[in-house]
Amino acid sequence: MSSFSNLINQDKPVLVDFFAEWCGPCKMMAPILKEVKDALGESVSILKVDVDKNQTLAAQMQVRGVPTLVLYKKGKQLWRQSGVVQKNDLISLIQSHA
Image 1 (cartoon, rainbow, N blue to C red):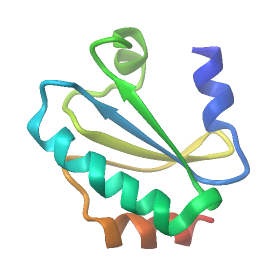
Image 2: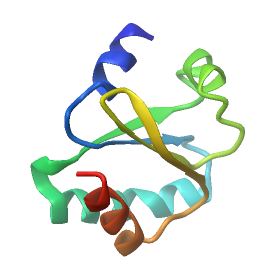
Image 3: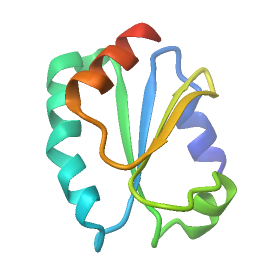
Image 4: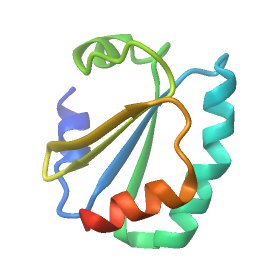
């Protein structure tokens, strides 16, 4: 958990994707997240957390469904949504917190 805290405690926005290998909508998010990273480059960090391999962290973060996307900055949760989120929505959200 301490390494997760370190990862989300950055000066730039950190988007965390809680996903599962078996989840159809999660597979739809992968190329969207790649496009977001390509568009925003180093101004954002994107972390993928497999809820099956990180059950304790998923429980602590109260992730009930996948995909769940959470945006952090300096360790604070700024935004959270479950389900597929479109690229342009994510880009404008991240830029508003950059």
